[in-house]
Image (cartoon, rainbow, N blue to C red):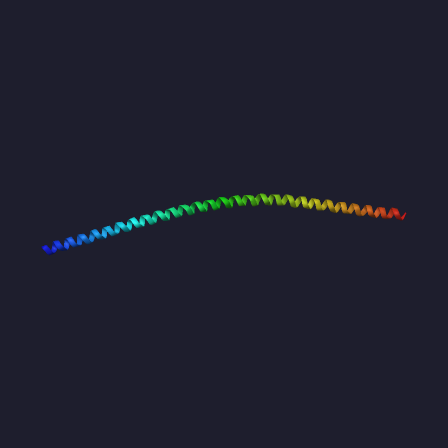
Length: 102
């Protein structure tokens, strides 16, 4: 009987120790979980910030492309005007040359 009581006490002691170890491990795991949740939250915010920045940059690119198109049109118009003026000057020089030959 005494051996049984001793074994029971020993088993209870081992079980209490195992439960204590498991409790400590649970506390440790919960702390790790909290750290990971915090990191995930930070990463989520970083992703959101990156997405906002990406959207802003895409909008800037779109505005710049619009400005570029306007500038290209102005350049083309100026080149056409310059070409027309060059033709007129060439004709005037030709007429001037013909008049001086007379």
